[in-house]
Image (cartoon, rainbow, N blue to C red; front, side):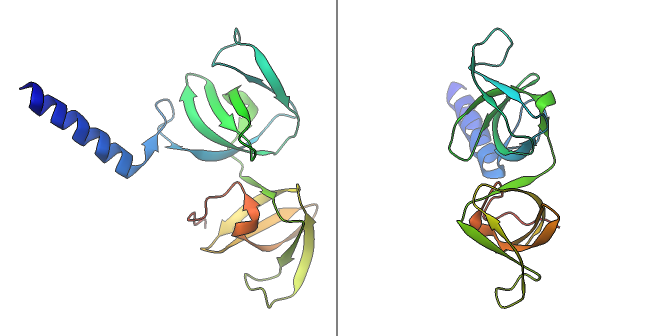
Length: 162
């Protein structure tokens, strides 16, 4: 009896990991990307106001990755892996990406032979639009176009967006 119970628990865990992890609060996929809604957001050691503030994120729109949920708190990390617990009210579902290459050409079409519409510097936060296997439509500073996904942080390599 005990052996069969353990078997079903292990089997259930394997099935859950094969389907991907879901947040216990929102039932949304973990990890997932969001952005900072607020211009400033305290990052705490734990999921409550009583936990110490380790630092403050100070960039509206900055892409973050949610790795855990607890009540109204989300455990997030930035591109460098720095993070902690942030209140969900400081986060937005609006998707943004961080430009990772020194000078990223943004094309009029998802083709490196098409015309260059703009060039974005490293560290620019751009709004994320649709994505194919290798390309994403992004916009920042009034400019928009297609960039190679491999140069962006805030979108998974296998992620397709319509």
